[in-house]
Length: 297
Length: 310
Image (cartoon, rainbow over all chains, first blue to last red; front, side):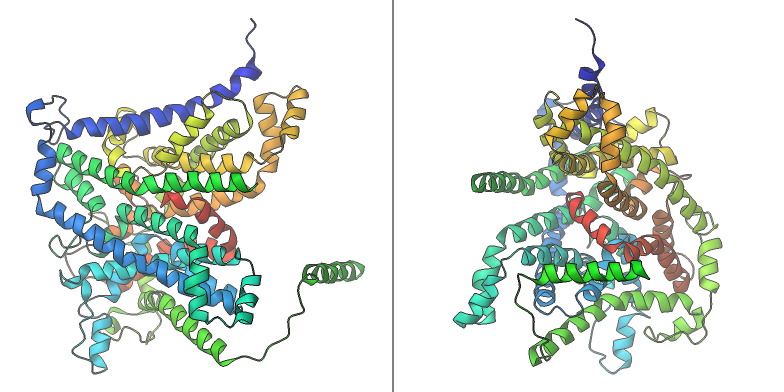
């Protein structure tokens, strides 16, 4: 048999990508999982003491910073969900009221173009305890208002949430707007003929029709929340104290500042597990959607 | 003159054709509800613009005025001092050479990152979409999963590997990591674009004794203008805005602009010069903002396509 390049070159062209997947993704994940079972500190150790293989995980759940991280993950997730609600309201309004659509879209989406470090820098300055928004509110007489959220452990997370909502609401607006535009325009005139109130039209007809868009948004949001790192660094650096730690920040902190490799690996494995839990519905959803569109055609 | 009338005519015809199936829309008088909606939208727009306004005005103020505490006031004296200071002499860590160091690092990171990431994934996407390769389905599924993997779980192994390759702590290290991490998503984007190319074109091309690379360079690449520009914009903005990869793999010599900015704003010693910080933030934000305001539509297409990148 002669060697034919035309047959082999497509396979050869896949070798780099295949190697990257095998080494940099699959291999690296297994490596980290393995390290999480060892006693590695600053440098990797490759001996596993099977009698206490879960040692790093035990330590993790005794660590108050990790527990705060998990709690903050939920707080940040629920708070950031406001971005979806906000995005839907904006999209619904822009969609019905066509005037100024492109201007509003441009304004609501620009925060997405800039780095989260810049977003964090801007909001950090707005929340400045001495010279920021609080000073302004106090100077107009409302001295009882507390607006320097980032300075207090109890409210610091809300500051982070506000900045993330500001940054991402436009993105969800764009997704929702695409969803709204795909709805058959006859529904609007039919609803008007039937005299359905606008509120019922949205809650009972439009939102159920857009459930796929909502689920997509929710999954994207959850994945974004798990990855939240830059905005924490720029706004609070985890502080005050450890009140704004999130898993992504905790893991990198454990590796780079504390130099505790086994411990950081265990935290990273748990991050992967949380991602998998969120990711599973997405796989099922995609499969379901494909089957549905396959059945339709 | 004739060109103008022709184009006007065709434009008119196009409008007529487009609006034909719809009922003619009456120019409605503005209703109370419309006004309420527009007012609400404008207030929201204001909320989105306030941080930008504060950042811009602060960057032009003097420190004396900032200490007075009127955050929303316009600068008494408009000065470029803070911009000059941020660009030329702001301190990041122990080095006080300003953000220009980071700016050029970001540019040097951007170019090889773009070439590596797009080059790798366009070929992979093309092979997976249009050629009969073994295991294409499972491979795509694995790539889909890889697109969601959090960076932290592959961070330490990647540090070890780049250190072994002697690129850790340099611009090349950052570029290689960008290419690796972008590969799954970009491959999926390219593959989805190419899979709609009719099979007949491919059969004809193969009949014409076209080889894999010949078809790629002579037929597929010239067809990919649209998707290339979308991916290019997506990659430029996400590489420019990246912080985590830059700070992890850049070492001391290859830190991009975002890392310099983060060092500058989180500094806790000495008097903080807020006007410098805000000028630095703007300097970092300007390149992606320019792209956004000029080709916003393509930018939105890119982020929706690459949404899973998070």
